[in-house]
Image (cartoon, rainbow, N blue to C red; front, side, top):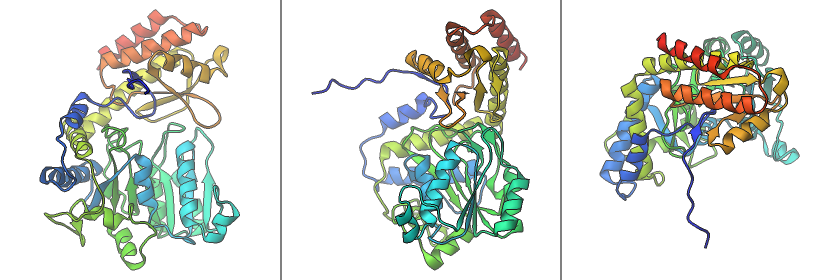
Length: 406
């Protein structure tokens, strides 16, 4: 027999997942063994969908959560795309690139898949590549949609692979101008940035994840929201999936025939443990307050950014939960070495997953003075050990002054 697996506590200071709040873990562990249609489990699901509408800032009735990671939510969001549908996809990092691949697979004909099963390139999907480290602008979206006139358009809101915020208003406006149905990957922004999806009516579909802004346990539920235009389309032509079918998934959350009902219909087995922890994570987020949480992220990211720049790094990101940077000249090219050394010490920072290799340091669920001080101190120690030249004392004093200014 293998020995019992023991995974130690680590400081997750990367792009996500973040360290789970103890109250969420407690809710997970405290849940009794209940069947997936037991009254308290379904009540938790009904309350969670209502909290999700508040988190999203929407009246979309088809707002619920998909079992799994953010990719499960995105797969549900892409389910209405059928082979041959014209799509324009905007890519400016690793994860929007994976989304692009998923969309190309959904929109491929059998002939397209047969020509390249793992990386199909259907003519009906146009990929607009924006250089790493740059944002997708409204001008870029407008030009592409004006030229290609697609049925669907896709963009990540915050691209974690490069740490860039993309132009949501510009994307919405371009979709409205050209009658495209917008799909947005909000995996890295929901629960961190303060926005209401109903302010962007041309974006018909939204998907997020459980392990970043929501900070439920990873592998619980990925939030999604569909407006009536997508649901009406699905009613007319359907989609090629059962599990991630937006209409069928919604039935288990008590959303049937476009209305909230008291008795949900069975769709698939849900875990009482997952429901309990997801429910508590949503309660925590709403107790914190969306606006206050967004302001807290902005404040602490500024402190982290200033400290990292004082260490000689060049910051290229503009997200408020993550700093993406190039190491100073003497350490250039040793990004993976730095990340590996930090992770060996229980300090979980990340490299970028595509070229050019950069360092990613995040603050998910680390919105306290003590937590930020710990992150900066650990990073400073690791860089100095590799030969960086700066005063740790000055770095920490500068951070302390910044935190005291709040």
